[in-house]
Length: 196
Image (cartoon, rainbow, N blue to C red):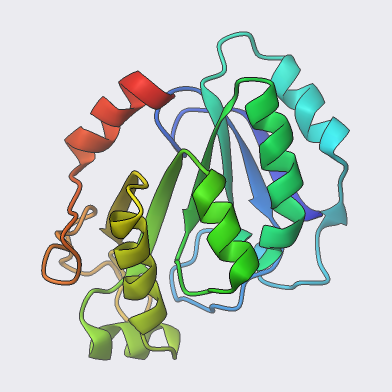
């Protein structure tokens, strides 16, 4: 697996204290991206499961592991056995994704994670395409799949316009017009009490 970096005590990437693993490589080129150094699929460095597991073992207060990026679903095939190992150790797993990559490995990854943070970029299809150069149909289909399969997720807009400036979007968007499942920031944290 290629990764860009790791934060051992992260309070911002998921409910509770987690280890955040920033997976290398992203097909999106969003203005305002927090981690543009993760875009290059050849960048970063290789890591082993053991390095990630060692970082986890160092923190007795750990609530879980968050895979972010880059776009973690781009390395879904590599992440699946690691997620299995983490679950064997009783560790919860969150993935922070745009949901714009879909294939059988990504579907298997979503079946295994405990929480998905779905960075929708923009609910409005025209604004989404203006921002990312791609339509949001796969992202919205991912949200629908998560809902239909009973997988907990938080759907949110990134809050940037096509120029990379902050827009007037709310950080946690109501996605109920696109799927039957809408989660607010408060309910994400109530989920944390049971899963993380």
